[in-house]
Image (cartoon, rainbow, N blue to C red; front, side, top):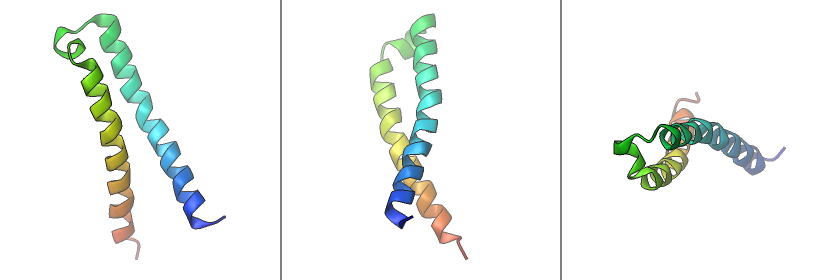
Length: 68
């Protein structure tokens, strides 16, 4: 397997794993109606989706620094 498809596959898998708790939190807030979260739920979820991409990329970069 080539390197690029391997890392893209890992990234997609890690991002899906990141989406699970984010989605569960959004569902929980929608059902319970927490005022402090439900007012800005769309902004929070959008921010978390962007944060997941940078968090996973930073984790990959940081792990490559300590490879040897």
